[in-house]
Length: 458
Image (cartoon, rainbow, N blue to C red):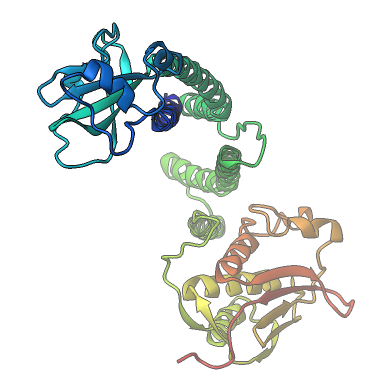
């Protein structure tokens, strides 16, 4: 409708401009035609007493027969200021004297104006001051504008018809184009309503072209896919967390049931068995505590929060604190360290937890009295153990949540440690990798590269 209205206004303006231009052109032609009409002979006055005879002689090149005027489409009258028609006295086609301006004053110049005949027919009139004896008069020369008006009326009807057809055509065409252009929006609306009704995220719509609608459809498809991936990760996290929580909870429930049954039956367990069960329960509680902490850490969004607290972190001090805890967890191991100053921007607690997780893995898989090499040089942290290593076919999965190597599932752990390391390093803007020892020897080497500088920023 807006398109049709705009086209209607444009056509109306163009039609009106065309009509007025044609009208002015035709009227100008009528004025030009009147400029060639006869004028009174120079220096001759028209005698008032015998204007019927002398007026014809006073008109240059005008014969007594007035039919010649009509053959040239001219009609001439001489009218005094009092309104008396001096020439021609017996004309049947008289110019309307009420439309003539007789207040010409002392002007001798001809003027042109629109007027009409006494029967109402439109005319273009030349008003020329003349003298009838001592009386002022005007000579009116008129040409009919009937053909001009007929042409203008026909043009107006033609313009109105063309404008009407143009508006109707613009409206129909605009509606078809709008429906075709907005069809993807209608599909997108229906898809959004379907997702809101069924909660089936991940549904996409076909994208055609490269216009704004195509960009909107592409953005919606990306959003829908991201929501589907997010829901899939959430579902997998809940399922994996439930699976990991089931084992320690089952062990705790079994031990608690045994203790309750022994007390209820009055049959006390041997002190060694009871101590072993309590120690097992304590270990299971610690495992639950670590698992819940890991789950809370992984519950953060995958993308970094720009409003999160990010401070200047002396990463070498963070590595030092993590080494102290690593030595407590592996008292029989040797830590060969070379830690140099490096400052980064990030979350201090998250970075320390990531380094501790790497050291925990190294302690867990190192042989007794083995060596763990820790290096921090130029923002590159390497942690290498001398254990059995990781098979090449398992390396692509080491940073997946809850993934554990089949050969290490009997060891304590939830499979979340390396996932936390990868997420923390990504949030800090760095890179992390895990692979075999670079020298071809036994063990595994983890590498973290973080952007920063060797001196504390001011």
